[in-house]
Image (cartoon, rainbow over all chains, first blue to last red; front, side, top):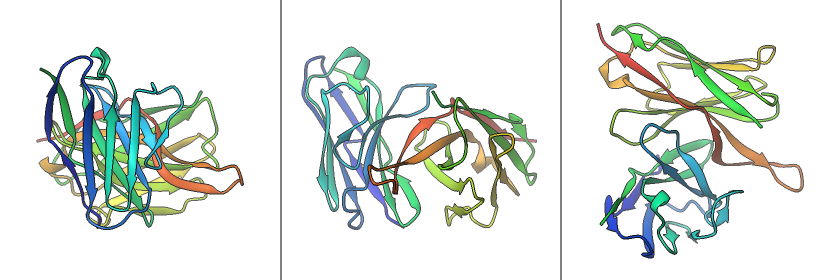
Length: 107
Length: 125
């Protein structure tokens, strides 16, 4: 199984800050990496797929990069609606695994 | 637009079988892959397994011995059965659509783009 490790687990930031979350895979997954945002009591929402492709309707302040084993999600200017938990997810050989999540809190 | 809705009992006794159904509305269940994903309270997400409209399946190895996913194309539904449940199976269960067709018409497995709202299942006597 491919393991996904996110860092940090919790991040405190202010509105307007540039925020970066990292996700590392236990082996190469090429660019098969997605990012989700989840708010309490809600289903996850797809933000980015194929490492850097923005899902339709997602604000351009979200961006993704990376390939192989190291990936990042960047929020260029944090907005009040962005305080949430973020998960990375990999796909490999008809199997999917998620990172443990990064909670973005108000500083 | 396509919407998903989970349904089923919210309480299951230990050692019994958890059964959930996901109804697809606003589109056809055919031509896509459909998954079940769960999230224990306060924890992360775990992929359970998928089904293709043809009936082809694949399961998370950690759950494979207890999971069965089936599809009913006439009802635009797919279902999850998880046997011999314990308290560790208490979670919010989500159904989701996975993948997309690229410009050449090939199916690309990648991410889960449409999710149901989730249903909480508690395992308790």
